[in-house]
Length: 383
Image 1 (cartoon, one colour):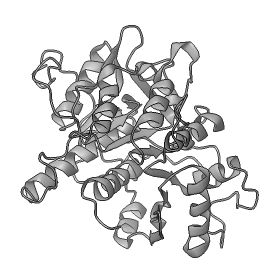
Image 2 (cartoon, rainbow, N blue to C red):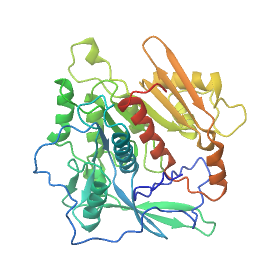
Image 3 (cartoon, rainbow, N blue to C red):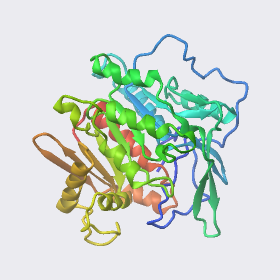
Image 4 (tube, rainbow, N blue to C red):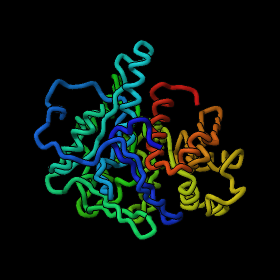
């Protein structure tokens, strides 16, 4: 479901060949009107040459693109969605608790994405900025256009998406300003606490001159231990087991001497849904797991699920694993040095009413992840 006033970001369907495609509803409620370009108003676009800002508390890396639907064109891409939700949560928190922040400044979120040097890119920049997302880490590609995902609706109302390929978001480069965020962490200065990335931005690997996967892998492998959040998005045909597992597991620094640096750094959090859980278990060599996430007694609750999540956390080098289960809520495993903590929530009946009443659940996972990141890593609340 959309948060109140969905910040003008239309969230992406998560289609996967292992489950039925979600019907595209003509009754989706978008809190922002379809795209109308403001060609003359650049007043909200920040000037990167202005005084240097402190490092953002959170950086979301990956795709910023437009979803072209029968009802209009909407800004999307999972990292962009998460960034906009985080910005709203941070602004809300600073208004309600101005004196309780543990930081010398209110938390901020930046998006590190590559846009085309075109009108759609400028409009994406403008909209992200006015929603409170820092845009000083946005890049522009000199050749590729801003990403567009066009929804193709069949006679049954099922939607599939066609991407322009390659698109600007395939060309995210490892600029010095991104590397500086990692270095500032090493120097113990006011620093970026969380790097949020998804798997889809690495879709082209190194093909067609794409650079996004290399950039994400470098951040994944060199950011401080327990600072990277990986959101698994398996969207056919834009993934391979090798790429997803590399992003999750990480790699040790080349030429490392110390025992600490010989081991890949752990993810702070791995987030995936129940279907992706089964797929990743199979990729990790688990042969005894159910292939259908909907079957009765398949281990999606309680001690069996906890055991499955513990094994996945070990296989994929993660301190925490979160499994989302749609209307059935979510489960969170926190694998501490001394103890393993497991939490689950069966969902909320009030949301079920909304969903049954033709509510729009698109992008609920992005809103959920933003709230989870805020709680665990910014406010440092107990789950």
